[in-house]
Structure formats: C-alpha cells, structure tokens
Length: 185
Image (cartoon, rainbow, N blue to C red):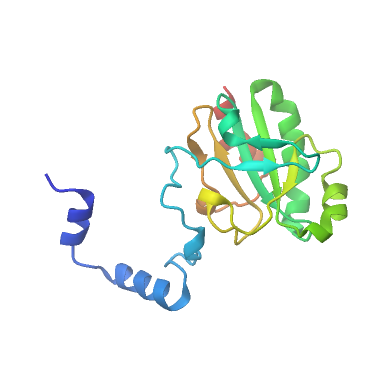
C-alpha cells in the first residue's frame, strides 16, 4: 500500500501546484496568499489544536491545555484594528451569556507594550482575559498576519474552527450562533 507521500509524488504536478511553488519561492506566500509562516501543518479542523498560553494583563497564565472540557475561542486583535472594535464587544457579551455552558475566550492583543494603557482601556469590562501576544508569532497557529482572526477549540481539544480558512474573519452574533452555539450543547 502506498503512503500519501508516495501517492502525491506519483501524481504529475498541476498548474496550481507549479504556481503555488513559484509563489512560495518568489513571494514567501502560498497560492492562497497566506504567508508561509501563517501555515501550520497540524492546524486542521478536527485535529488536536496547538496549545497556546495567554499571559494576562493581571499576571495570570491561562493555557488552552488546561481548558479541556471547555469550548475555547482564541481571538487575536489590536487597539488600532477597526473591525476589532466592532467584534470584541459582541464576543464579550456572548461569552458572558454562555460561560455557564463552558465557553472560555482568550484575547491576544498584538499591540506593543508601549500601548498597554490603550489595551487596558479597550478591554475594560470585557468578560474574558486579555494579554499581549508579545510577537506576531502564535506558536502552532502561525504568524498572525491579519486581524481580527479567531480559532475555536472544542471540548475535546480539537480545532473546531480555523480562522485562517474563514471567509468571515470577525465574529458577529449570527456567526457565533452558527459556529459556537452547537459546540456548547
């Protein structure tokens, strides 16, 4: 029986394969336009989600690995991101209403440490913890190259929603009901 690698190697390259390889070499991006660093080989819906720790503004550390049994949303944002200003209050309200069902949200700000006062002011009153990411690289989630971007982990620690693949990057009430509410049942 042939492995996936052998089957792939036996198949002639398509025009898409050649264009993708050329884009990767010339531009450092994939055919879909995503930077190579944003691609994570194991970042696939239905597979184990990479563990990521949030170092909160109040000095705590919350790891996705410790939240098994909960539905977890990782949200990446910044104070200078216009769509984030619309999305995050909606997400905070939804998280507060569904915390009793096991929903947890971790907010990773891409702001610089010098912007900490603005981060604190924007996050004031939110129902979820917030911290500075520290760099544009978020472990197994890759380099955060667009915001807002969100990832959802189900109760079993599996990736349930991959923000890189979403055509709707920001949370809306309708999207939260469609994507998250079924995971909470």
